[in-house]
Length: 220
Image (cartoon, rainbow, N blue to C red; front, side):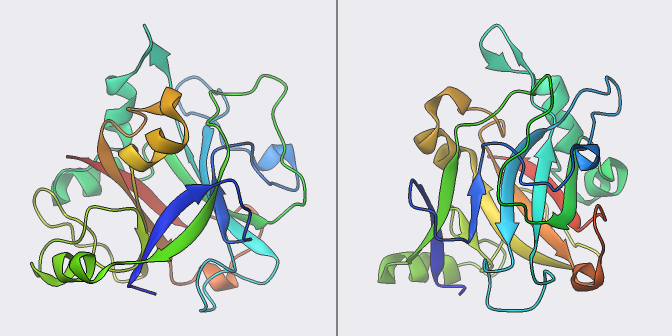
């Protein structure tokens, strides 16, 4: 699996999606932004089929929610700083920040609040093998990974190394540029950075609405 990269397309392969609504069973599970109590933006949903290992209970999924606001056609950098990490100290201070990773039953239909937040155009996650050159780039530096959206593999640390708590496992990285290819109106959503999703190793024993991991971005 570490030799795969993520492509965003229109074909639903059941692995997950970026954008769209949230496939929650109930609207009361939808997380709210701490300062305004507005519904957060669903960034991506990962299903139990995303990886061939048992890290999400059967019939459940992880959805990453972030706070996304636009001002004058651009995304609000002050808000983005709440889920941006550039060194270990930032990770310690951020906590959940303005990003939440919720474990939930995977509903057949997407839900939307009465007043929806800023939403991304829906794209489905697909995998494609890395080329030989890409695999070489992935392994070239022990501290850096390939700058493509991908499951597992090496995190592309761009600044100081981040050492996540032992109970978490690196699951995927998602590039702002790949989101923009699928939904041009959302270029800059991750501040031209790379988003990192870590799953809690205990998520497989989790219940509806539990925190299933954490998400943050690093600027390029």
